[in-house]
Image (cartoon, one colour):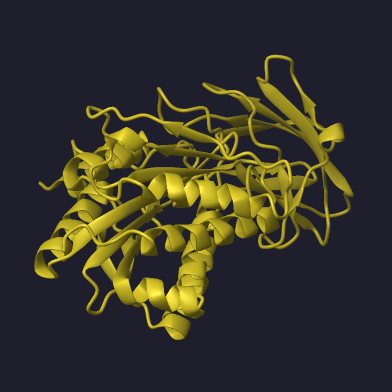
Length: 392
């Protein structure tokens, strides 16, 4: 029995690793549903005529404190439903986002959010508009949003779409490739962790800027091929996981062991590209979200390839951001652990190239994320073009 079938058999025997795949809470006067991509809440209990307590717990433990939740409140004849989130194996982190259609979102006012001192719970009132309101830890960003994004890239820039393999639950793992006669390769990874939607938005904006069709982009793409794996943890996003894939593993701790199919498929695909196309990988970017904006890199003294590029990129980017935010200070943390099974360590150790984990703050506004990413892409392309090819 292969790995995927073995895991699915275990899920059938023990129940899903996600405790809330199809839960539905029918209450007096209203109901809570999570039957959509990303829907997540472990249990619910009526706490009053128009109040509910929701239990929020992870897919398995131990786990990073990224307590995802997403649900719909459906009601008739009520103008609001009072919700209390009670966390297990985690504490409150994400300010609720509300939507009347699951597409357009507004952040819940912080001055009306009641969070316990130990952050074990958070309470707020959900206004009911047109009978239904969506609530989520972060704006939902699922497969349809990705498809709209890459369909535009395919139409506008001629990027090739393909599938490099399947997730544990059989979902396609997409790849976007822009490669003709170039010898150098930029590798871009996205969405290894389901809740990290601000990082996903940055990845989209960054890649969009690479293909902006201006003179800088044309010069860059004439020299550099680009491969993007934008949606690596498909199952975790579908099931509303905090961190892990369906196998209960952090995919950004599986670059080397390759016990899970998702990073294994991606790494094998890159190896095939490098071998069959005689490519020289030049840089790896892995987009994530955390509490604040930060770039995790190696130290400049660690590099033997493109040794000046990371510093040149980030110095120029900081200067660019100060044109719109005079007090902007770039946050860079530099270190390398060769034994760490992260993508950052794997690509540096395997290909000897700079590898950066590109993190965006949880609460960053979308417009600011996009501007931040576009400016960083400009500085990145300029820094790459200013370095001579190391393989000639």
